[in-house]
Each structure stands twice: as structure tokens, then as C-alpha cells.
Length: 329
Figure (cartoon, rainbow, N blue to C red):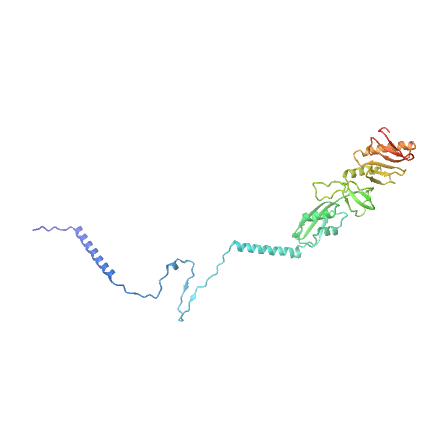
């Protein structure tokens, strides 16, 4: 007889587990072979692509007892701000501001305030400035200054200031005349730099000079492009100022191209002193000494020339000869 082997508790548990697994596999295979029953659904299967859409408005269906009527959630419009929209707004705003600044009478210049004028009138300055009635934003101080100085050479300096809403101030300095220059039945004023300008009003103390010819012109300063070219050289103006106190009361100073400055003496001769102001006091002393010598000797000259004080000469009245004297005459 074969001896029966007793099973342990663990072996018994393994057998039961294997039997249960075999049974489950048999049932699963039977269900897989069974034909599926068709099922109809009233709700359509959701599309996978539709699930991926995030920003899609939700739809609500409410049964109202009436077919084909659906209520949708109201959608709120969304404004997307961009730099283009901001730029357009800024351009429109600037355009309106420019239009108002140019068209509103509040910014138009009603009058020009003129300071420092002595002979020029405010009306003349307003007319030459071209700022009257203009918008304050269109008035350029540099252009107004250049326009005034080009129109009136008697203006030594001009400063134009513009203030909102419609104020224009013109501060000027006028040239002071020192010479009353007469030539070819015309006359003009000349300042200490040789600039000529139109006489205005009455000024006392001017030195009258009659020009027999046009004097050599001066040179405009390089640091002031708006300054006009001087009518005569400054050296000639200085010579006139030095010689003027020695002109006889009954005579008038003249300017000659060949002999320079001089006058016609009441005793019958012409005196000339050149155009140099540096040695003009010496020339005057030589002239006075020569006149005293000629008068004491009874000589009546027709011309005395001391352009060169170291070699003065005169022309005698009777024999029409020139006599050159040395420094000791």
C-alpha cells in the first residue's frame, strides 16, 4: 500500500488560489466570445478636438415646451489694447492741440512791448517784427531779431523774448550818432564805428562833415554777422573826432580823397591833415606854427598841407609855387 502524504496548510491555500484563478479565466473567455448587444444613445459622443478648445462659450439648453428654442449665455466684448491704438490716440490729441494753438485768438500776439528805444517808435518795431497778430507758437525770437537788425542798421543790439500766452518783448540798444555826413545833396548819421543810418529827430553836438568823395568803407566785425558794413573806416571816424575841436567856428570840415580831412580857412586858404588819428595832435601843432610863420611874413597861401608832419608844404597865393618845409620850418 502506498502511504498517503498529508498536505500542509500552505499547500492547501495554493491549490485553492490556483483553482480560483482558473475559474476566473474560464468565465472571462466565455464573456469575450459572447456577441455584444447594440446600444443606442441620444447623446452624441464628444469630439476629442472639441475637448481641447478652452476659450469656447458655454451653451445652455432649457426646455420651454417649444421646439428648437435655445438660450445662449450673453458674450462680453473684449477690448485688446495695443501700441498702435495708443499711437493713433496720441497723434489725434497732438493734432487737436496744434490746431487750437494756431487758431485760438487767446494765443495771438495783440501787441509788441518795446524797451530801450529812443528814436524808433513802437509802431515801426511792430511792423518790422511781423509778430503782430501771429500765434505765439509761430514767433521765433532769432528770426525777429535778425529781421529788425536788417531793417534798421541803427540798432546795435536786439533781444526778443516770448512768453505765454501771447507776450512778445523787444529790448534794444540804438546806435548813437557822432557825425553828420553830407554828400551829393544827401546826408546821413554815422556812429563811432563808421556805420551810417537814417537821421531821426534832432540830435545836438554832431560833427558836420562834407564829403567831396565817398570815403573808403570799413570792415564788418566777424563776431557779429548781423552788423551792417561800416560806411567808412573806424580810423577815419577817430581822426574826425580828434580834428573836430580845432575846426574854426566859421568853417566846416571836408573830406578829400587825395589830402584827407581839412577845411577852408576864412583867411583864404585850404588846410588838410590826412586821415591818421594817431599823429593828428602833432599835425595840428605843426599847422598852427606854420600859419603863424606865414602870417608874420605876410605870405598869403592858397593851401597848407600837413599830412606828413615831418614834411609839411604850402602853396603861395601870388606865384602859385609849392614850398616844402623841413621839421624846423
